[in-house]
Amino acid sequence: MTWLITGGAGYIGAHVARAMTAAGERAVALDDLSSGLAERLPAEVPLVRGSVLDRPTLDRVLAEHDVSGVIHLAAKKQVGESVEQPLSYYEENVHGLVTLLGAVVDAGVGRFVFSSSAAVYGMPDVDLVTERTPTVPMNPYGETKLAGEWLVRAAGRAHGLSTACLRYFNVAGTAEPELADSGVSNIVPMFFDALTRGEAPRIFGDDYPTPDGTCVRDYIHVQDLAEAHVTAARALAAGGTGAGGDLTLNVGTGAGVSVREMAELVAEVTGRREPAPLVVARRPGDPARVVASADRIRKELGWEPHCGVREMVASAWEGWLLRHPEARTSTG
Image (tube, rainbow, N blue to C red; front, side, top):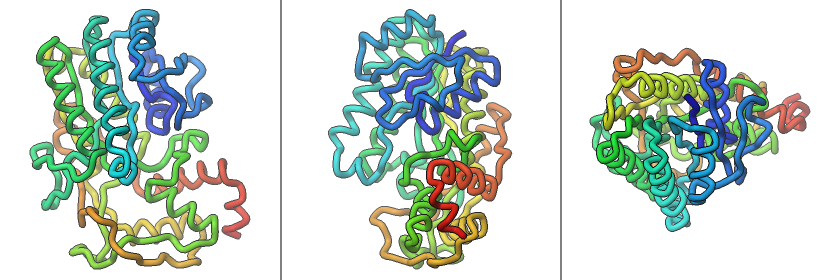
C-alpha cells in the first residue's frame, strides 16, 4: 500500500517519511513548502507541491499514487500566532482537514492517521496526562487540533475509516543533522538561537509549583515519534481497529524535564554557560506541568521511546551547527 504524508517535507513529516520507507512502506509527500524543505525527503519519496485546501490536487494525488492510507501532518502550529490569527488557523487546520477527508472518502481510502497535540488538554491539573484527561484547549491552535480529532472520528464512524489520533507532547532532536528543526519556536532551538547571538536564553517564570519553580514538560525525540507513526499506520493496515475504529493515543515518555534542567543540559552540550539563562515574566496560559502517561500506546501498539533528553539536545545541536556554522565560533 501507499501512504500519503501531508506536510511530508516538514521537520516531523520528513522524519515520518524516512521512517516509513526504512520500514519498507511506500510513501508520497504533499507539502506547500511554506515551511518544509524538499531536500529533507528520501529520494524514493515523490513530492507533490500543493495544499490540503486544494481539492483537485488532492484528488489527483490520491488517484495517481493509488493511495490507501493518509498520515496528516500539514498544519499551522504556533500557539502565539494562532491567538493573533485564529481565522487563518481554522482555515488551514480545520477547513483543510475537511477538504482532505472529503477527498479521502470519495477516493475510498480506508486508513487515516491524524497529527494531534497535547495542546488539546489545555492546563491539566494532574501529574500524568492520560487519554481520559479532560480536553480543554486554551488557544485556537489547541482548539483546531481537538476539532480535528472530532472530525476524524466522525468521518471514521460515518464512512468506515480506520483512524488514529496521535497526541504529541514536546518534540525535540533529529535523526540526521539535515532533518533538524529549522524554526526557533520550540525550546531547544530557541535556546540555541539565543546562545548563538550571544544573548541569555529566557526562562518564562520560576515561581511555578514545581521542584525548581520552572515549567515541567515531557520531551519526545522526533525519531521515536516517527516510529510511533509507522507503528500506528501498520496497526490500521492490519485492521487493528476495524472499519470505523479509532486509536487516540498520547505520544510521550512519561518523564518530566523542567525548563531549568533543559537550560542546564543545553549549556553542557553546547559548552556555552554564558550568558546565563535570564528569568522573565511568565507567559500567559503556560501550565506548570504537562507530562504524558504513555501506558496506552505501549499496550495498544507495543511502542516504546528509545531516546533520552541528552540525545535529543545533542542531535539537535548538530543540526543547528549545520545550518548555523557561526555558532561554532560563538561557543569557542
